[in-house]
Image (cartoon, rainbow, N blue to C red; front, side, top):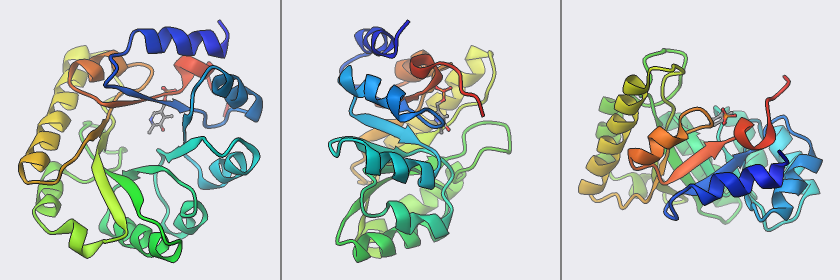
Length: 218
Ligand SMILES: *Cc1c(COP(=O)(O)O)cnc(C)c1O
């Protein structure tokens, strides 16, 4: 199936409340152009250098989302244009995004990444750290960033009960943050293999790569 057809099929089966991020990491400009022609405007990348090259080469109405692990020394390169940073997972990153946003006279939208999977290879705040952070006045500390919600990755397993439980944990934390008055409206969870489960648990944003563009060759 073509990229355009894959996108249409995917969108047709998604509730309107769910935003689709097309994860184009490792994929060439030609593939992204095909998705663009099929109406897709939000793309996700996990390497700053690759994303910046693509941003330079492609139409400026594309919104670029950084979905990968953040290195603080790379934030300055994406600060002029990035639309949403999903993987904010430590205080040092919050502080650096705030600094670079200010330099660029912007307010940068971010999500806090929460560690919900069992594997210890995945990054993110623990639920305890998140709640501690959510009860401090984040806005006062970091006036140049706008924390719009949470992001998480479930365990990489075919055990759907386990994946569902992890997504549910994230949804509960998201609601708890809103009870604390944070006004979140983005819950980024779900990838090619597990987005239907994530949507059932209340995801508002899914990050789908291989299901649109085919398998990646690293
Ligand atoms: C690569 C990646 C995705 C997309 O993965 P697929 O399985 O290809 O859909 C989603 N989220 C993050 C954080 C990723 O790194």
